[in-house]
Length: 260
Image (cartoon, rainbow, N blue to C red):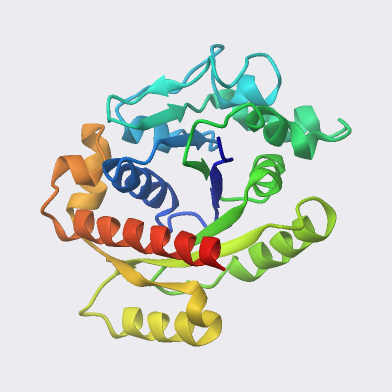
């Protein structure tokens, strides 16, 4: 069986729609009968709770897998959504940087854990909004990076640093790492600022930017409070439909790569 495509979804800036993108893009792909795994690497555990599950404490979690205490295959939870599984977060992730600070080869811990997984089409790594050991492990493990950027003031803040980090990871640990795309989120069609940000990001990053833009839509932030992706909370909403479009665009980019 072929190896899964592994997406690290990352941005050093918080509040850009990173976890929202992970949960809803993963759900949209699972609706297309792709077998999907979300790995929640953020101590806040928002991807976990957005799917109606609880962060683990002392049990099987992304932390316990990263630290080698549990095998990944035995630690996955069924989300109740067909084809979609999750490795939940734990608050213990907060201490990872200190615990691994002096451990040789700690950048490869997640990659080693993922090596036993061949039965997924796509794996999403939900990174915390900082470039510490968790994000480093994600970038070393990933085949591709998806960068959400919100259509607001200081949208590009942190992106330059992330791009430098990606280049360092490529140079030292993961030469095949690629940016799959940049996803524009929280777009407000009534706002000149939103339009300006879209223009700036497209002019700077060109074809790396996905055509699909995710708008501000009240259903998107409402959905996690009900423990559901927006597609299940309100499939007909604009937000849900945009994630369906984004999923199809991601698949098309995958086909382009495969076809050379």
